[in-house]
Image (cartoon, rainbow over all chains, first blue to last red; front, side, top):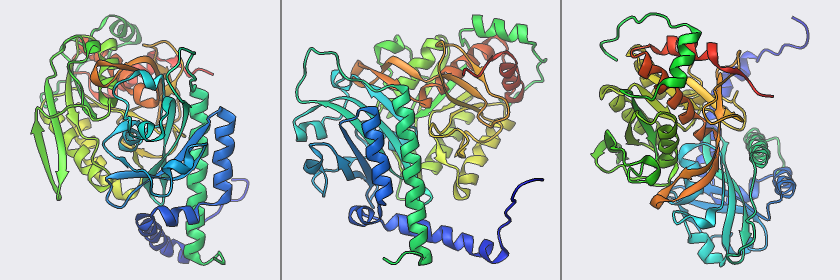
Length: 199
Length: 258
């Protein structure tokens, strides 16, 4: 067999289960404030770059709260971001598309949302906007599905203009971003558990 | 099924004929999902063979008859696609989604076992659980039971990367499906991976809540196309066990699209 073949050292193998448990435990204790603190700048830049690439004006990371009853936005961009971040909004996990993605664990892209009476209107009503299209991707880190990465096209009011849409390619781009963010979060948490970070 | 016979092997020609001419008649498909709105116009007035909600409350799992209304629309969309592909197949509503985290695997297991016991031929699983060791046995128990009792499991894979381990998609006895681009009833095969099959994952007017429709994309909507095709096959060749059905579908599927 050519190339480098890495075999885990016996001491590390013995410790790996403990590390894994510790990672899960910390993941279970993350709340909005602590998540915001550990979210690496590289993860934020990755997400913002992807939003720009696919033309999404607004996007967010949602984290399930400790009760499991709500998804809470913990990072966002777009001109309305300040209106729903920092505890100003939470989405019940039995309502709406984002919660559906959290339930199924499957990524989802949807267009023409505003035409549909089943769309959860909670956030649209709060912001005074109309969601035209949405992508929602599961965010699995620290050994569990813990949140959602989403982006939307919004309009300020219903118009007769052709609605903006997302494509399957856009979905794939955001899936890649979500997977990258998850790995960066895991790496950040592991570094903290091992004491590899100063802070 | 329990009274499983040993049906003869079917050749590719017979498989193609069944996939083209089968309607799903006599085949029962359990939709393990967020519920189904059985009154949706796209379902053409079908009668759901079961309408159940499985819940976990306080560590106790309970089954609620007649309470399977859709929480999100996802299950109705899945059922609508199934009905288009296999219009004569019977559909059972097993609402298992909506209970999160630790409860989810046990609720799904309870729903799947119930469907197996009630004689369903296909379990459609348009969801995925992170493929971690701690969840493994919770899925393996009913996946293996389905296999040994001749019940087919069709599962959506992770869309981020089909090679990411997820349950139930990464059990070899399941027919695992990823998103592809093709015709609505076209089946694709990718050799050498656990997620071997692909089907169209886009639906312009998927059935949704309150009789409405939505444009949707995701492997969740590829899986029911394959379940529907499998129902067509089984309606022409009843009793075909999972291993033979999977092999037959492999033999006639189109190469993976570039």
